[in-house]
Length: 570
Image 1 (cartoon, rainbow, N blue to C red):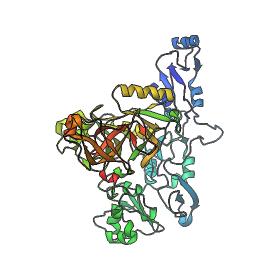
Image 2: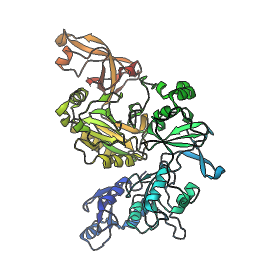
Image 3: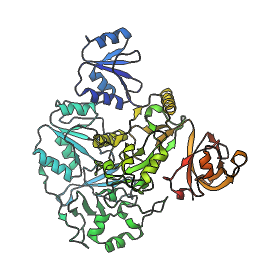
Image 4: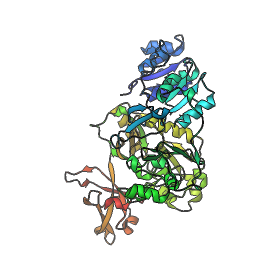
């Protein structure tokens, strides 16, 4: 449970960082912030006990606390002033690397970290950039010029930020009293020294060279070897290919996001440098061009600049109040839109089909970040949204749409970090926005918000687990909440109408993904009954509950779902 869950704060006086950043910190840890001292406020954060807010808090019996006391509540950094290092309760491992350190092998004069990926072959060594997954901000006096230090860290796989923002994993700091150090403490970012960095690297960073790996022009050199322990950088790209003990790797997204074992992965850079024939011989049937997905049979490939594949989109389960605690989740409105993935190069549908958005709509979308969201024209406008998005020349009608982003799957870190990075990248764009998420206090709060959204014509709510990873496929950390449930089914027959509907369709005979057959006879307009969804069409329907036999009770037709693949019902 979040450390500030159930607490409602009001702030008066000065704090050590910007007021909006401090408020964001409180919300991130489960708190609620009010502008005035109302009766439901539980704590006043106060630097001046003589203000009118402080007097009102005393009159109302509101607890008055200081900024330092708040930081104790959120479990902030513990500073040991007797040591050279600044210690923190946060782990020093990069967030996305669930690895087991095996040993430090200093053979050959180089400190080499041998690690084992938890989900790979037991005991299989893999040498990667030792700082991959870390994101540093530097402040204070360093032993080397700032630019040299940043180059060394980048060469080791790290990312660099010029300021302390969401996504930074560590602040390298020689002055714990600096403004950056203060902000890092408030954002629960570990503060470390160069000595800590030397421990991670296994040697003194002053001994490091700023030279990069040899650069190779792939167009001029093919059919080459990468010898054991050698690193080769792709010309014009920030990617490095390696061979460690016969395991060929590349730090490009195409190599990283494959589901194959590490010794069975490849990418276009390895194909071009080692030659197609060499890679086919090494991998056999595991070649990247022979890896169909389980659901659609399409090739799993992240070529042509794509940062993420629609094959791995995160999908929601239904909310179950008996299995989940509301306060562990963030709430957002469930949009009645069309799912769309920005790959870093183009928009694609849930099935991976290109969406031909005009240049003015996608202008400014980041080339270094994949985004997950929905094309949205407003509540109840699903059919119009799909109609515009599926046209080859939607033109000016695209100005009626918004690309509402609710995740950034290519970014390392928990959900809040990914969303903050997305907001930073698209905040100035006209047709793109980040979907707002708010902490859920309890079941009453969830019920109130669900009622409010549904009364305004919304579909329901989405519940996202705080600090959750981006899962592939259906996830228990992404849940949908509705008064009525909904699902998709494929039409396999039509039933003739009777009485008023004589001569028209009376019901459509449908089949669920599990093979259960049933019929849907309500929810259709007279026009739709005269021209019903054809056999083989996927439809969306709403229902109250499932019978004991697994048949939807009281199904009501909603719409045709052209964005759902028919092969899911085979």
